[in-house]
Length: 199
Image (tube, rainbow, N blue to C red; front, side, top):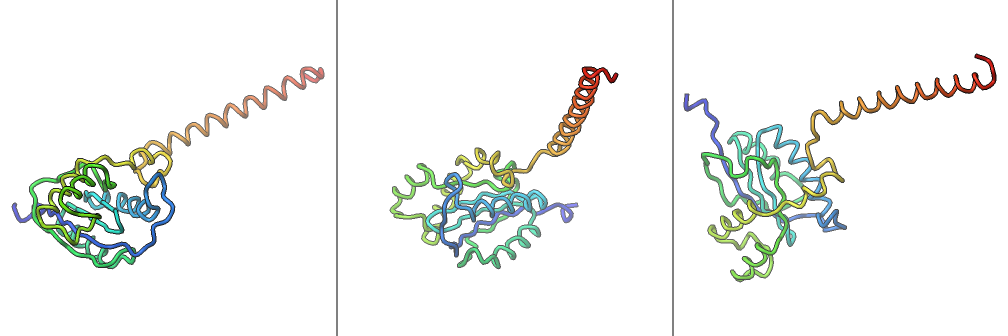
């Protein structure tokens, strides 16, 4: 029975972006918006969770889930041209997911992280310089951090998973609107004919 159970794994990797920072969408770099949108769709499909941080041109990402799914995803991540110097800095088996509700959480550089970096002598966010204890502390701060994409999901629906009922609800409203438009048109024609004494 044990052999059939899923082995949950947590990995943390770091990398450097290969793209130039451009105009932001609500303070989030457009490439990051696209990465988040795709990650959230694919991770939901594969039962994975994670948190992504991007700052000072560096990625710091934690992924958790079934070992085979994680290994498969990381192989794709290593080939992604949007970053380079991909380095796996932690891999361990876990008994439960750290953030089960997040297909892919996004955490920006907030005051808590900035303060921690300053207090520990870091001028910028450079995960290549982190000791293992620093990595775990940063991960803890990211798990507790606020995700600003919650506020922009309504403007950029690709970041969110739309409710299953949304499209059918919209379709129902369209049919009802069309029905009332036809009724209004018939009544208008009837009123016009009545005025002219034709009916």
